[in-house]
Length: 359
Image (cartoon, rainbow, N blue to C red):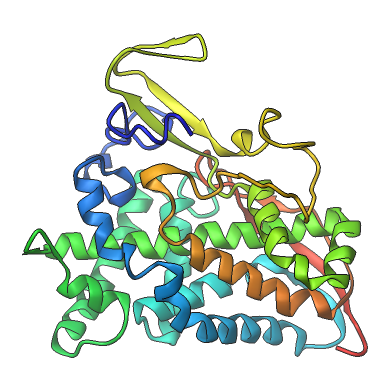
């Protein structure tokens, strides 16, 4: 928290993640976005979405997000009272993709494209998502090109015919009286697509795994739905969908007796922070009623996740419709984790379930 609240002393540029491989050709062609900006640019750019992403501003979207979440859950359970499924494919992935696609103004038939681009942009270090014969950087650049091409066309349509969506917002946005460049608009779209669905997807699937592994907590939540908001916070703490971000020191500094020299890189490991014995009672226990719960799953300081409220809504609505209908649920196979040092998530979570007869 101390580091995150001093963006002038610990900057996000030049690197946002700890590099485990030598620099690859083409990395300089991946444009930087809001998460990598430092003051004062970060504050100026963040203002574009800060007002639109407050809980009050998003209140008008609650019913639509609730409708999307209910539809995703209904689609799975319409197939019968019991069965097996990949929870990631059927619940955790479709929900945030649908919400982000809807907020951006992307037509529903194109929502699967958002899923495909996200996997390749944030999962390029995993062989399953890397393009065949291409490096991680080449995979990201290829997905970026496809995404930019698609959104260039959508931005042009919104400039000619504005709608109530984020693409329209970016198309007409100004920073200090100057309109965003075409590239800046596209980078914003890419950030919303990637960051807006990957973390929520992994918190949803990781949360389901936690409830399966802690059946007493799941039964308690089913019996007392009023615990759902605190359960969502515990799921966020427990899963910590972003593994780490890096910061670079701009001057020599001492942290807890450790000397950090100017130019050295620090890694902020959020799963570790969210299990800090100095902050949390019994940090390695999953407790849906944990209070207080000062987790850092969304970060802290000026880089606090702008979409945190949307993510919380998606998680709350998904479990609100899902849990009352579950009689039994268990793993149908081992969870398949993403190979990444940035995103802590699951590619597959096979489940076996039986629904309540009265559902």
